[in-house]
Image (cartoon, rainbow, N blue to C red; front, side, top):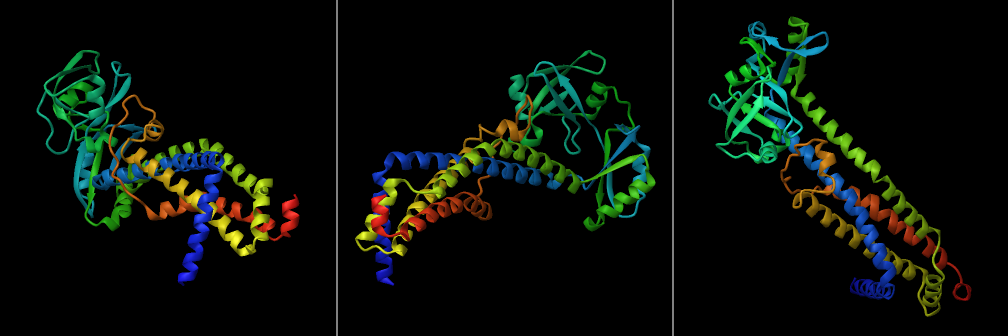
Length: 378
């Protein structure tokens, strides 16, 4: 066992010295390799982080949301629907929600205005999402003036900011009192944007949704799981868009691997011939070249992955955040929780390290099986 270890150590020492003799070529290859891994890993890590944050934020979302449809469009739900739903078997708490959108020309973006179910702000006050507050340059105690449904100025006093940890979904959010909401949008009492239902048994969510539709044919019912899948589909689509854009980089890497597999340079072939002439057997040559490909590819992979990890979790992924977060004026600003997914790491390594190592060994095997004199004369 000790002899085998010493033999491998000698092969590694020779491989490192061999790599150092071609510093320029190997450095360029290392940088290109690491850049490829950095780009791919950044997109994968950031997309996975966003989906994970969305799942955490939606964990407390209503189990069922009931919306009224008029001519196929979302309409205000009457208060009478609350009483009809309270009588359904399996339904727990039923409540009406008030939320809507308002275009703010100052920041050229749609704001989400909502009445919170718990601890709404006092009349005349508003709680702002962090991105909106930054865009407007507002702090607690400042006055936010907007135009209501009739085009008249409506003033809110900023009571505070929302928790920055929820900025993924609260970047453009305004939380107001119910009276302010109805006055601002001109919505009379007894009408709600939609209704939320709590289901006593989580396994009966689908069954309760069917009961709601049977009682209210003009309704649309959304489950928490459907909402979560919608968020994930959006992030998957945006991540796929970026990966498609990076297909050119992948194509370049494939060409690099193909070029490596198509043959060796004359200098490399002569080197293999000399090694065979001084007593190296085919197995030793293959092991040496395998170590060479593995050291270069694994080092480049780890460098690219570590840079991508820092880029996503500590620097906020400035290269890809605008695309993956969404095309919006009010971009959310938040830090994803650092995480290393071993399965994800293994998949990236399989897609980048293994092809290069394999491409390195194939031409070496061809040259190592030839007669040393024939190889040297070439």
